[in-house]
Amino acid sequence: MIAARHAFLAAGHYAPISDALAAHARTAADGVVADIGAGTGQHLAAVLDAHPHRIGIALDSSTPALRRAAKAHPRIAAVACDAWRELPLADGAAAVVLSVFAPRNATEIRRVLHRDGVVLAVTPTERHLQELREPLGLLDTEPGKADRLAADLGLRERERHRIETQLHLTADEAQLAATMGPAGHHDRARRPLPDVVRATLSVDLTVLSCES
Figure (cartoon, rainbow, N blue to C red):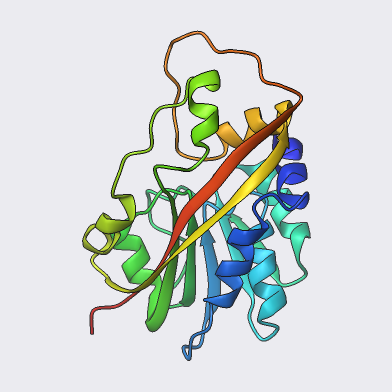
């Protein structure tokens, strides 16, 4: 499964997300780029490519995924941890915190975020992978996720950007895409997919910072 996810991201299907993260990771704060729930590290690697003076820390609970992340970029350090517990970072150490379809521990995110740093949070919209919901039994995306981020994290929303494009996936890639986000499954029977599947990538990128 880890190898399949790595291949899916390496094929560039979610490159618009990586590109947007890299473009919005500019900050005057000193510190690392911390990717919480980094998986195999492709998004973090894209950010580091665009910011050669930064180093990155990939944080994830999956050791196999972190082995991939450690090889995704020469300036990535990979550390296993539970996102719901204390993160292995010093107070204020992170100039940029990435959160892409990942758990968000508000207390720990605020603790590790530099006072001049930013959180880049990616959340699915109601249109995300909508073509796959019926055939794969996906739950509908909860509306208003991005609207609640600032209040949930105790941070200030600075800006928000919609990222939307059409994906052309194989049946296997479509199945994999359905497992890579927060969507669950209904118990209803699933239908076979055609050889080529069109699906909508639709997410919000929210830039947040400390209140002060």
